[in-house]
Length: 88
Length: 144
Image (cartoon, rainbow over all chains, first blue to last red):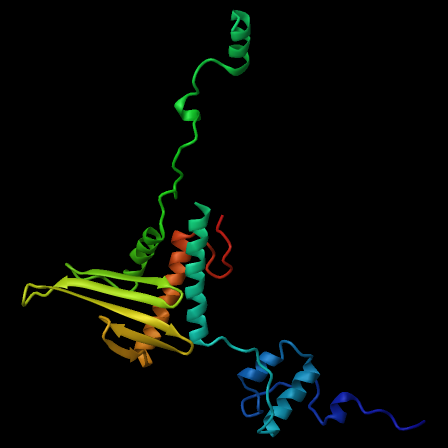
């Protein structure tokens, strides 16, 4: 029998699925968000990369800043106003 | 017109004028609405966002256009008994809000003042969309 392919956890030297992280494991709000969209193993990999590399970029949804938000709300008010005026 | 033809026409079309209640109203509910009127309605909500208005004060707060918000306040100065009014214009820029008071003093909103303005816009939007335009503030869909 030839060499066996290591399972994913051994391959990446990652904790097994189901391992719970506590404070200090490198998990933070961003990586916690990532876990909702990636598989558990993949999320652990991302978390570990993030914890060990200061340059790793954690993908996160772009957040609308407060100025974009105020522009959006203002545009919506004006647009709705014009829509109502057109309808009468 | 022969009598029988007239009779036939009356039978077919009716001879009486339609009752008033069958007529469509000439003016619909929002017929007289203008942009100014809508802004006034919005300002009725806007003026209440900052707590109770002191007695004798008149306050307006509204969105004028895509780039401008207005705060207007009027009252009589108790010491001098003279009317006092000031208008503050907030101009939205890409990453800043410029405040112009009485068309002269210019400054950028910062810190708590900026945050209060942003909160006020948020509240204004929620209430105006819901109360006046009867839309869901999040989806923009008309409320049933």
